[in-house]
Length: 129
Image (tube, rainbow, N blue to C red):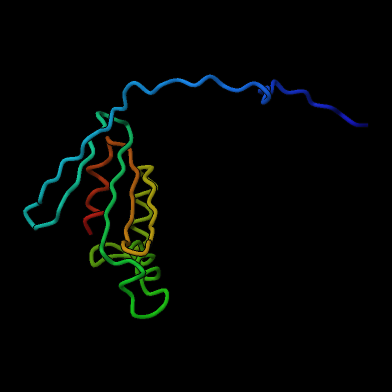
């Protein structure tokens, strides 16, 4: 048996209307330097339930002496620290519903952590480690 599904599809033979853009609200970043000399760039989008913390290092692919060194080194960021094992990091992230990821580009390596703002004080020490 053959079924035909009819969907409410857009008629692509009709050109959509064009509207002028009257205003674009571009948020400005602020830059601060922490007491240890680390530059902090903040994009304040107001109060949100979710916070993204991103840490970047000038350690991308162009800085490596051998293939995959930057990628492998960056992937090891969650394999433990002097103070915490990989399991402790993962369990803490899981407990507070945090998510992390790593990335390597030509110029930078870094990682991101997404966490509910109410748990930032619980997860931030792991980021510091």
